[in-house]
Image (cartoon, rainbow, N blue to C red):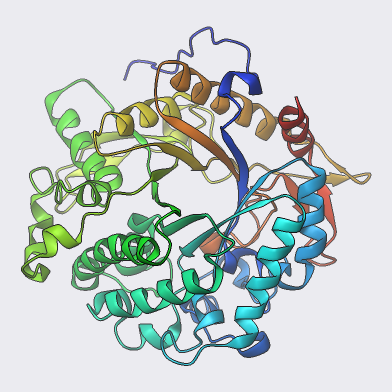
Length: 455
């Protein structure tokens, strides 16, 4: 494989190169930071249940307390303001608002997000809630969860409640977080909640998530036509291991699965089944009118990029006939998550998405890295993360200067948090969290981001 990580001589990274209207922020998710998993009437989510099962999460970690953001949000938002961060992406916990997923509303949950949103606005921080960041109410999973087509109606009820409650103050919404991940890891591989495996649950989960993606957008616009509505996708730049036909075709299949499967239906292009013939069983779940129901004209698309994936043909891999070649086997730098550090990935992905005529604008809604962090003498020096952020941002700047319609960048994550099946070991935060004492310490990367935003 040729070495394509030859970063060009890039211009100096400056905030002014992004224009005044560029959105800068940080991202988080409810289950990863809130804790208070049964407080004040909250119902169980699939992650509450999954993380309680032996062998599912490294070191038997769970999100029962996490960062205790539920109780500590005033101090955390004050810290965010001190770091000059103007936009805050967080998610609403479906089961905190609707403990059974539908029906009875939990007034305590409603009041919590009222307080959170109001406090953001008091501090001059713009709230960007995501409706669904993987924590489906367990009561709905018991009815089939994402495999049950009724979830479209359940999700519409939840979205309508959220926008009616908070739409007077919230101007920017995201519908789903990374549907390829929560369907693939949760309903095919079984490594994420709810831990189901195989094509049986995966195929209907894909279709119903696609329908909910568009339905959620329509619900928000029905109540608040002026709102800016987006949805987010995990996406990686894909390259073949060798420039030979078998690897090239394998890379196209992986690209279709990871980068196109949920995006293209939203744009009215349908599923990319020409590349993914094994996904044709989706047609079994298609009802008349679904092609139109899958499409929605989003105001922005959230790009969540961390790395690239290098692909080789693999005859023995069922259906996809492709394997990812790990970074460590290729002798390239990688993070604690074993993801290659490849800044040009975000440049290529932004260009790839920018080529779609149906995309109005792009916002990088997640980008960041986990490295071993050590709290020493009250400080956390994280030069690898700082370098990572600078180099990736340079590539965002490069894409923007070439005419790509990217209009925002959010770091993942504001604080160290519960990193799903990996537990608390991988730390992505700009702010270090001691999970025993809940002490917060701004890392060197956080100080740099503050200085950059003030520059």
